[in-house]
Every structure is written in structure tokens, then in C-alpha cells.
Length: 72
Image (cartoon, rainbow, N blue to C red; front, side, top):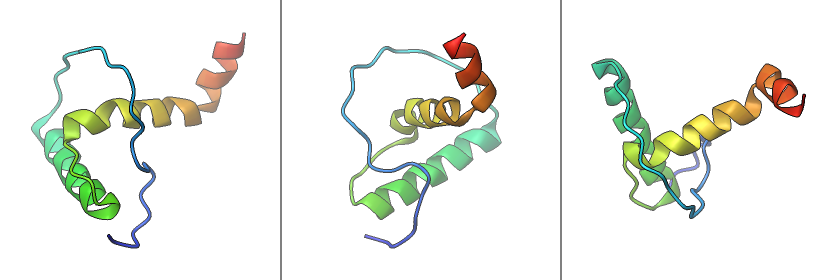
């Protein structure tokens, strides 16, 4: 395992719902690179599709405007 500190830590086991979305090729490439780095860092193989919901959840949790609006 690496000592690199990624924003996204080890993934929890959760219930899932399938969604489909379209993204630019450059984003897909970056997601795959992030997944490879995440796998190397945490010693557990994970693909980009598995990471996307966790990344979105982390993004939304850190969005102050969204959190304030959700409390209203």
C-alpha cells in the first residue's frame, strides 16, 4: 500500500441502485486513473463505476450551499 492520501478513503459496503450517465472521454480516463490509484493505495481492486457514487456523495457532503438548502 502507498502512503498517498486520497480524498476518498476505503469504500463502505452499501445498497445500490443502477443509474446510467454520459461523460466526456477525458473524464472517463481520469476516473479510471483515479480508480487505479485508489486500488493501489487501499490494496483492494476497485473500478471507476464503483467509485462514482462515493465521489458524488463526498462532493455533495462538502457542498455548503447544498447542505444549508437540505436543512431548510
